[in-house]
Length: 104
Image 1: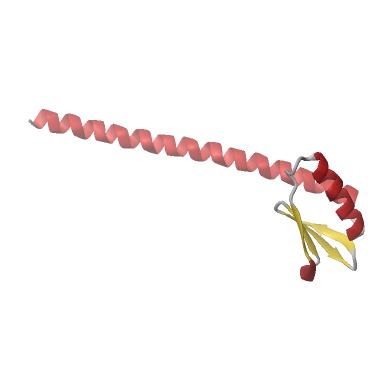
Image 2: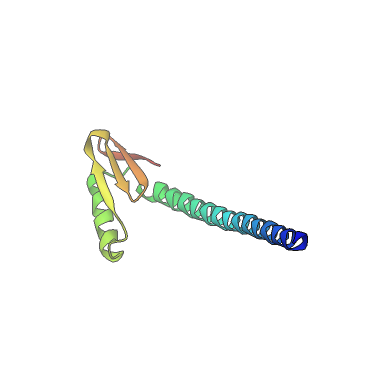
């Protein structure tokens, strides 16, 4: 009876260790994916800043509409007029006096 209890305890301990290792590995993969996504997002923002900074709101809307047609609906944008912002997916295009001044 004692041997069975000991064996079950060892099996339970092994199962907990496997779950902890699995959770840590999953977290590492998730963190790596997030880091890569952030790096790619930062690179795209840098490109947009070089190409779009200073454009009028109308010119930005025109570029977004053109890109949206080519992207088959993957590009979602929405204007927030009282804040002078156009949200493109999760990226904020910030305008002042009708001109693009910041991408965040």
